[in-house]
Length: 425
Ligand SMILES: Nc1ncnc2c1ncn2[C@@H]1O[C@H](COP(=O)(O)OP(=O)(O)O)[C@@H](O)[C@H]1O
Image 1 (cartoon, rainbow, N blue to C red):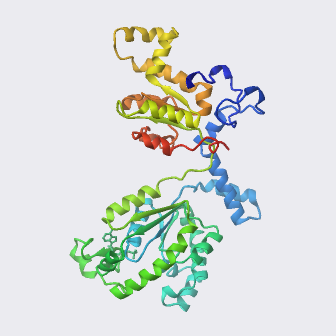
Image 2: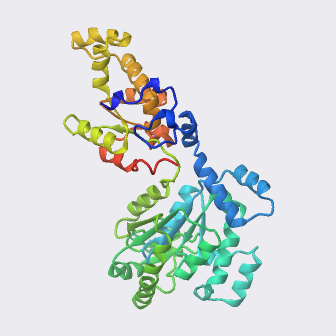
C-alpha cells in the first residue's frame, strides 16, 4: 500500500522539509531537492554548524571569522571529551589510563594538573597547597581550563579522572564552556570497594596501577618497586565513600544526556570494553534525519508485521523485496519479464536483477524523502555490499560503512528512529 504513495511522478515538488505523509505538493512553499538534506546528513553539516555556533558563543572572539576558520581547520569535533566518575577504588584511574592509551588522548587528574611544570598557575597551587585535596574548586577549574586549551588537548581530546567532585565544580566547568561528550559513572557496592582498595599498589616509575589479587604484574622487577598508596585503609575508604555518595547525586543531573553508569563489580577488562564502547558512540543530534531501516531476522520472526508498523508509525515507505519482484512480474514491466522465467522455474532470481528492482524503488522520490523500511533483503553479505555500493545505506550504519551495515536485531531499528516531526528541522 505504501508503495503506491508518492512515486517518481511527484517530480521533486514536495519540499524535503515538509512533514511526512501526504502534503499537497502544489501548496509547498519551497522546492527543496531531496539531495540537499541527504548531503547535510552524510557530511554532518548540521552538527558542524551547531558546534561552531556553540564555540562562538562560549569564546566570543573579537574576530569571529578568523575564529571560525581556525576552528574548522583544526577539524577536532570528534576528539574524546570524557569524564570518569565513581567511588574510590571503583577503577576510575585504571579505566581512564587504559582509555587514554587506546584513544591516544590526554589524562587529566588533580595530581597531574598541579604537577605541570610549565604552568605558573600550577606552580602557585603547589606553593600554597601541598595536599592536592585542599586545592580550592576555583583554582582547580582554572587549571582544567588552562590544560584543555593546550594544543595536545585540542587535537587529541581529554579524559578527566574523578573530576568534578562536587556539583559546584560541575557547574563551574560547564560555565567555562567545557562540556564532556561522554560521562562514565562506575558503580559498585561499598563493601566490595573497601576490600578492593586494600590491595591497591602503584608503580612509582610509570604511575600504573596494580592490585595484589586482581592485577599483579608478572615481572619481578615491577613487583619489587610497587608501593602502597596513602589513604587506602578501611576507615579512610569508608569516609571517602560517604563523601562521594553525598556529592554524586547532585553532580549527575548536570549531565543528563551524556551519562552512562557501568557496573565496576566485574573484571577490569569488561568494565574497560563497556566504557570504550560508550566513549565511541556518537550521540544522536538534532540534525534533520531520514530514517532508512533494514529489518533483518529469520523466517517467522515477524519482519513483515514490524515493517508495516514502523512504516505506519513513522510514515516510511514499506519495501518488501519479494513483493516488489512479484509486482514487477504482475505489471509486465521490462524487468518483470526478466524475472518471469525464474518464477516459472522456481529458481532464485539473480542478484543483479533484484538490485535493479530495489534500486529503482529506493531511488523514488517518496523513499528518498520519507525514508524506508526494507525487509526480505539482503540475505547474505554479498547482497548487503551490493546495496551499500548503490548508496542505499541504512541511516545508522551509514556513518561506519566499513561495518557492512545492516542491523541484525530488529529492535535496533526502533532505536534508530524518532517519531516523524522531530526528524525534520
Ligand atoms: N574491575 C575491577 N576489578 C578488580 N579490581 C579492580 C577493578 N578496577 C580497578 N581495580 C583495582 O582496584 C584498585 C583501585 O583502582 P583505581 O583505578 O585506583 O580506582 P579509583 O581511581 O576509582 O580510586 C586498583 O588496585 C585496581 O587495580
